[in-house]
Image (cartoon, rainbow, N blue to C red; front, top):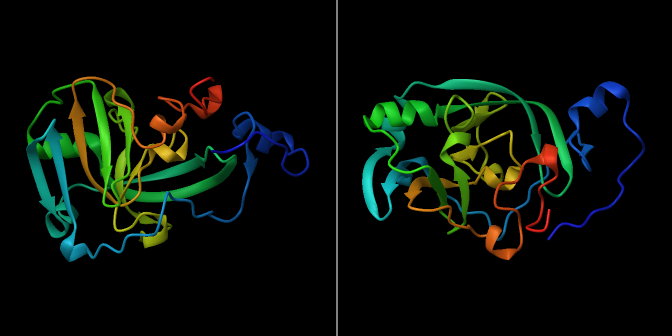
Length: 201
């Protein structure tokens, strides 16, 4: 669990406008996860959309790379209070995934599923409209394993624990189902601008 505290000196006005409450700017890219880093070779990677336990569509790495790719530039914010500005990502938007699968989302709620058995809930509305992607590249390079490669969810307008690393699928659920950190006291939504870190916020 992260704790509230004070980091560094007061930022300048331009920086402060981009920092959600309680955040500080970092120049590096901290590595945080619940356990050891999985090593998933692209040849062994597969991404699947599920409706509950039922598979709806699935792609191998090569099939996924053939889908339309989108670039995104912007800031990311971690619940442990660091923010990193001007990051560059590339991947397949959730909109394009649904279009490629030829399906409409069956429910308004989603669990992101990872190869290390991590999961996290995200409302479908926060994944559509170009707001989220399955990212495979960062800063012009293939996504490194320590940052979730070969693929991670990117939902940059929410705290970064929602951007699940080592992504293997999205599961549509019948209700808003808590994931790994949500079951351990983190907020069900996680808006950094509203400082929704914990379930009491």
